[in-house]
Each structure stands twice: as structure tokens, then as C-alpha cells.
Picture 1: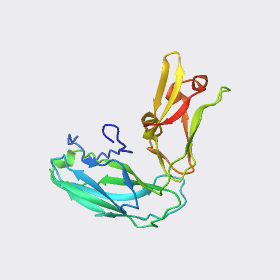
Picture 2: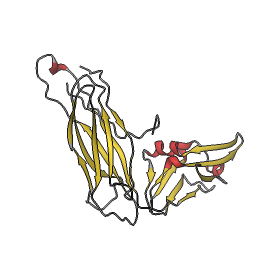
Picture 3: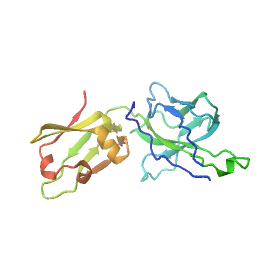
Picture 4: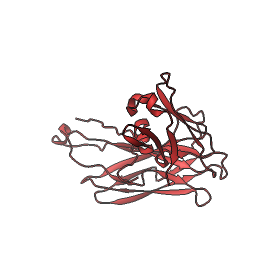
Length: 230
């Protein structure tokens, strides 16, 4: 996603002066595996720092409510040392079933690891260690089926989006259109993604968007419609 990308959960660890180095460049910022084409996806990391940066990769479930501990994704290499000006690639491979009843979603975590700091001058420095979480979606075939449920005028505090399809639904593919005294207003799915800090609705999942985050009264959403972008 260009400017609108999905790096999540940036963590800063203070270790003891402030470093002004920049973070790495990571592309793409979302991985989507179509198993009919290939069980592999490639992540490219480019160094923009003037120092060596050790990185560690791990997989977590997209939904904290997931009861399964199985992680059928393999990352090679699981760790690497990114040198100044260097570009490296990491391969993510699906090791699970090739025919899925519904799509599977995970997060790929990329964590900077602290380097051992030696010398009296370095002991007074602060290292800024960054963590990214990139969505990884494994396709199952078929399409998402997203339903839109506007709040009731009686005071419902949120609107809901529900995916009853077999495939994950990217929020950036949708928009909510409504009429107001300002004319036709569009609430973009990218804005919903930012508010919810997630990029997709998984199969069988419902997400709620509090009206206080949108700045629209429940009455103003009556007659609103969900549209898939062209």
C-alpha cells in the first residue's frame, strides 16, 4: 500500500543519547498468497541505516481469538543481519493444506534486535528498536461477502460490517456512501482500516466501528450503503 500502508505496533525500546537513524524500507507491506499460483511470497528489506541491524521474523495469528496454535507458515531466513545500504529478501512459505475451506490470516512480525554496545561513549546512547506487523493472507478461492449494518436511530453506538464469505475482505476495497446536508459523502474503507488498526475482515467475522470515531450521528447514517470500489 503506497503512503497508506499497514505497519502495525511500532515499538520503541530505550536502552540508555538518542539515535537519529531511520528505519528500514520493507516491501510489500501486505503479503497475499494465492495457493493456485504459488505457496511462496517474498519480502524485500532495504537498509537506510548507517549501522548493521539484526532482524528476527516470527508469525502470529491475525485474530487474538483464534484457538489454533498451528502456524503453517515458514520464514527463511528466520533471522538476518542487514548491513548499511544492503537489500535482502525473506521468503514466506505456506506449509499447510493446499485446499482451504476458508482463507487464513496471520501477522508477520519483524523485530529489530539490540546489538551489543561496547565502549564508554556508546553506553550513554539510546537505541531505537522498531517492530513491524505485516498482514499475511492465504487465499481460499471464492469471494468475500460483506454485509453492512447501520446503527439504529434509537441510539446504537456503532455500525457493523460482517463477512459471511469464504475469503478475507480487504477494507480498502470498500466505501460507505451516504447523503447529508453537504451532499453525497463517502466514508472510505481505508479510513475504517486506520480506525480499527486492521486491514481486513476475516471469514465469519464482524467488526464494529464506534460512531464517536466517525463523527457522524446514527440518524445521519440511515440510508447509507456499502459499495465495493470499482
